[in-house]
Length: 214
Ligand code: ADP
Ligand code: MG
Image 1 (cartoon, rainbow, N blue to C red):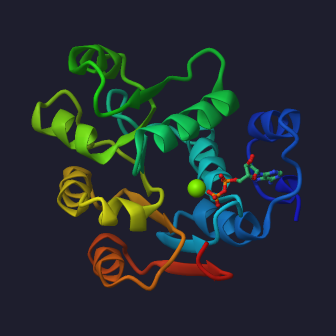
Image 2 (image 1 turned 90 degrees about the horizontal axis):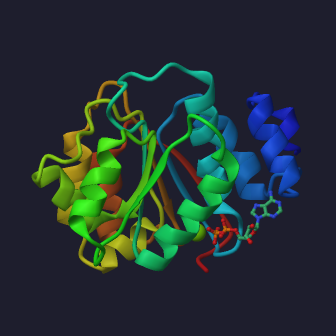
């Protein structure tokens, strides 16, 4: 399947083409159509199968094609287990949305808190970060998620292994549940805590599982 076979904004298709992303990987071909319909998803496939674009494409498409629920709050929040992973996702996202009017913030643990408060005051449409520091900004009231449209948990299994379940629940409950779509990505699904998280955070999720754990 080609990305151009999907109902994706032409500006995004152009950026994908510039980066050499024309053909969707299996997991992208399976997940993106459901994600574009606004469904909650739990996706598992092995490492290297292309899960990042499986959520970045629908997230960017939504921001490009639809009007924001809130002018101030972020529209998309992406959580990753480690600083390194969050940074990689941030760079990939920024490469696909660079240009006037787009605004992406990277919010990592271990970095200067006040600099992040200033970045959040610029009302980024996309926030990428680690769960602990994002939760700290919610507690500090430097971040509000009432207008959040899309919550993405990348490597959810690793976030749970690192003990982030309380922060994930805090973040999830800070968002307005009526309007929000949640997508969880994981290398494996055979984890009792992940099963519990899926039950409590996702609404009638579409399960997409390809191959075995990686
Ligand atoms: P995962 O999160 O499943 O481990 P990644 O999203 O990190 O996988 O992608 C793995 C590699 O595949 C990256 O180098 C990425 O640039 C590349 N990739 C992803 N999707 C495509 C695509 N549609 N076409 C070509 N390369 C892709
Ligand atoms: Mg990944």
